Amino acid sequence: MAGIILTGDTSGTITVNAPAVAGTNTLTLPAETGNILTNDTSGTILQVVSTTKTDTFSTTSTSMTDLTGMSVSITPVSTSNKILITGNIFVSGSSTSALVIFNLVRGSTNISISTGSGSVDSTTFCDTDGMNLNENSTYSQNLNFLDSPSSTSSTTYKLQMRVTQGTGFVNRRGLNDNVRAVSTITAMEVAG
Image (cartoon, rainbow, N blue to C red; front, side, top):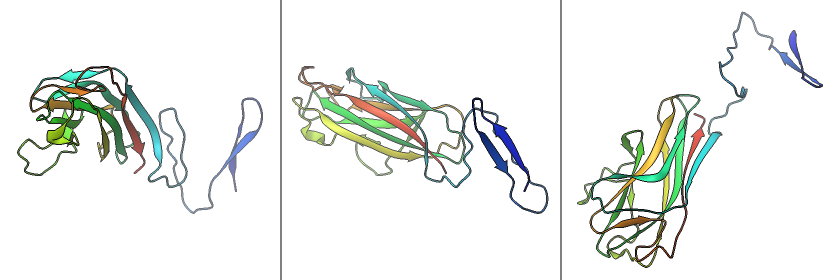
């Protein structure tokens, strides 16, 4: 079996052997820096990008507005790969009768949107306590969504939020900012 021998920069060698097959076969190397994976890698995490928000955010908007500091950008290496978005957001409100509502957005497209016929709107998630949101506390909201962007371009995922009334807060309680928390959003590329 014929092979190609690569000599290391300082020592050692790597031998690349071709399998014994009839005919001519072509192996095309990618025009980019990285690793060549030789086995089936379906389900393997190829890269992880994460953003941590340590400051606070508040809004009185009843229309979706970008939650500053809660976005993450990732460039998939293949259109067949998926992006797993995870996160943990701490939320509070100024009113026990208000809902704080969130959307997950890819670029400018809402994703992970409910198809239900709720009276508020279709959304990714809202505060867990709903009508009993307590201004003295913060509530942890978890985010998990497997997206199929079908792209090898840089892709940005972000959170948007709005309130039905009053003020919605992230990383602090509604009463004051004496109680604070940290929120995160993470994008992981999963081999298809």
